[in-house]
Amino acid sequence: MSEKKLFTLAELAEHNHKKSLYVSIKGKVYDVTKFIDEHPGGEEVLLDEGGSDATEAFEDVGHSDEAHDLLKTYEIGELKDGPPIPSQKSQPSYPKPQPAETSK
Ligand code: HEM
Image (tube, rainbow, N blue to C red; front, side, top):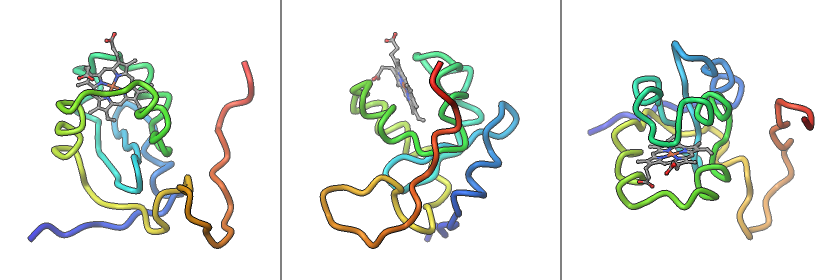
């Protein structure tokens, strides 16, 4: 029995640095702190996405099955409010997460 912790976006956002790095992908929350140095795509992208919803970034890369499997080992919980990026389903309106950065 694995207990799932529920995270708010605010809690997730606190883990956006090298000492504690969480990302959310499709509503699940992953602690990738130990993976930062191992990520074949480099630490920068992970640090960039840390503390936020990385679904799009993760999917855009077209990660392999192996990468998806790896994800499971880092799973620590779920987002309280579900995935912040709605799929096709119509959703009750709630604020979208704001991208932290302005255009470069
Ligand atoms: C958070 C969980 C993540 C895991 C477990 C993960 C895992 C992996 C793995 C195993 C690879 C090797 C290629 C493959 O098997 O597909 C890879 C490559 C890569 N990842 Fe990630 N990744 C994660 C997140 C991200 C994010 C958020 C980005 C953001 C853009 C990213 C960008 C990349 C890129 C660009 C490569 C290609 C590297 C290359 O072949 O030069 N990854 N990742």
